Length: 574
Image (cartoon, rainbow, N blue to C red; front, side):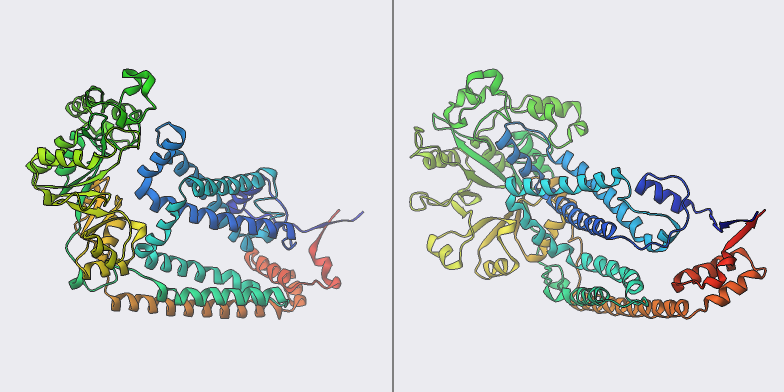
């Protein structure tokens, strides 16, 4: 009795076995499969690519949004009433999700090389793979929706960051799209022709051309002549150095000056008895022990406390207990003792410090509510504090720009973007603007008309470098200790040098893409014209296992097997 059994060759492929196990939870060997990807697999692959692109954008957003983590936590606090670092779980989950999806996508791109060696290989061939990708996608989408609701204005940082990162992102995208040409060429030059192939080719060419011409739309201030670089922007300590000490305290202001800040910025409120004091929040609950000292008044507006009550509160213990910026461990015992004994700072104290150190002050004055007894005299209270501190009035700038006719001698700054004509009509000489509200064109226009611009908040070197190249004279920062370490823009390049890099990269990419398409065409044409009969007959003779395997692969790619030679694929067992 003769029994026929298909010839099956299992090669030792550790990488393939590993990928199969990770993707589909299959750790056994499977026979070779010649099945094409099903529509279901293709649909899931599209979902995988969509998840990757969304997570890539999401990850990039949080990388550049690090500049505003302090503001994000403050916004969440105003909504929830709880102060904690909300960015930590977001960044951690984003890192895990992006790593997972990237791994799946990278190994999926190896599938054209290995899929014919594995049966039903795919990230979705097993239930856990599908759940993992869907869970990551849904979590990211929900995160995007939540951020858009709580922090919708922050999306502007994506466009701002492109002024610094666009040239480097362009090179990375160019390398990626050029590498993908290997897969595109392998799909397009196959013997079978279809409309889908032509559509894929056209889309790929359009993407490639758009990428080649993308630098024409870039606006990068640091692409400039080195001789045109303006002086280093002055650093203003925004609420002092709040990452090193409790915000709006004397320790914080001293730390800011020690780390190179030339000016101090503070939030000013007016107590019920007319004493200006420094407080960012509407209430005293976050940065003081008011809940212990005055349990029934912790949600009351800070301006309805008198100065004696405010001065009795501790304004440093919250910083040591919550460690909002993960910096408490770097403090010495002496520093912790000093921080733990801090009280709410009065405006006069801060201005006297600025006067002694020959520094300037930028005050953001919050007008008391209508029912407050100092609602009409708030600016006179502030002016009184300035005069009592003994600081020259020309070194004090405050916002908002109101009651200009009654407050003379002080520098006033507008907190909104104005035209040069409006600035002259109001008689002000400076603007304090968020970095997302001003463009390179606006900065140059203000410079030409002798209007000083202070941009806030600037906490990351990349943003500081971009504004430096733009010609901004001063920035307000929560992290003067970080900007102090930026003695020169992170990168600076002449226009001619960048044009050379841009054109050279495009030409190299084009040459590589054309070469890959030509090689794939030659490779596929050789396989398609190979005679299967020759492969069968030559396999009978003694050849090395490697040569036999190569001939088998050529037979597979030929697409058909003559029935007369099927007997060579069987072994006889008695």
